[in-house]
Length: 76
Image (cartoon, rainbow, N blue to C red; front, side, top):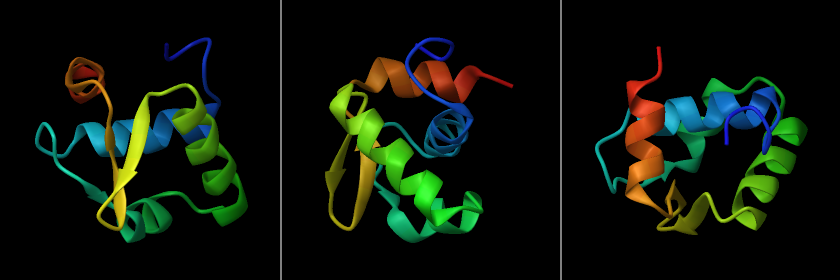
């Protein structure tokens, strides 16, 4: 997933999301503060949603599949 389905901005967003507890909703503002380019972030979030890796909820995003979140949480 990490090598073939996303760009660097997408990987950074998923790494940040992986730092949150499993099933947690990551506030949109946290992602905006973490990724310097808003346009690149928007494009990455849209692509990640199309690939069904993340979903929107409660003013933020979370992993659709908790196992994917755990994998990113374990990455250095």
